[in-house]
Image (cartoon, rainbow, N blue to C red):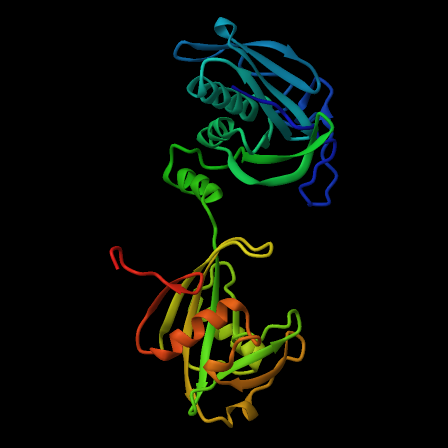
Length: 335
């Protein structure tokens, strides 16, 4: 199993705008503290690094690269400096994922404690799941994908990026483990729309600026925002008023569509109002261009196929909670 660096970056992209401190001539891996108490002039703990029967011996060290060779001709682990205080870790090891994980952990701790690095990064092909698991189980959080980040045989390939800071809680702690898992598990969008009716049973729909389909009031829930608060916020932004939410009419799972990932949508009951409600609403004029009432049986061609499919059935039985999959009822097994 192997994981190789996709590229070496020559600039620090932390976004701080600060010029990195120079490296010490006697130890280019560390930030320079020359002339100050506690200056570091070299490695304080010498290899080999050991974990049970696994031994890593230092085979190369220069201004840019530190390489360890594993005992038993298992392969190598390398740390390449990419910027002051930052490095790229890669490995080419036989012996299975457990050996790779132990080796990566050893070199990671060495790089932080003895090389003075503050951040390490691992880059792997997203299809190499075994290498990704080694990175994760070694404490590296998944940070994203560089689309077309590496050129392989003349073809642009994606690169999955995993990172660790020296002050990150380690994976054998509760906070470290949960933070690690949070970086890898799916993060679904949550959408909160509001179904508002008038006394004739008509539905309030919005003319939006970004598509031809009429849409329900509401939108995407923001990070760390509960869905009901998101629905009220969206109404306030779009209509100028947040109508009371009387409950949940439907929960709908939406598959991938037109560049969007899958999502969970909640349809809230915005109540029944006099048709004159329109006169008290104030479309924002940017996202919402107009508002109008429409009969549930006359939605075809006005709304998306999804809403044309689900809204009539939801409004037919507004007193029950509708459990939907892409706008269609989820039937109990055996029905």
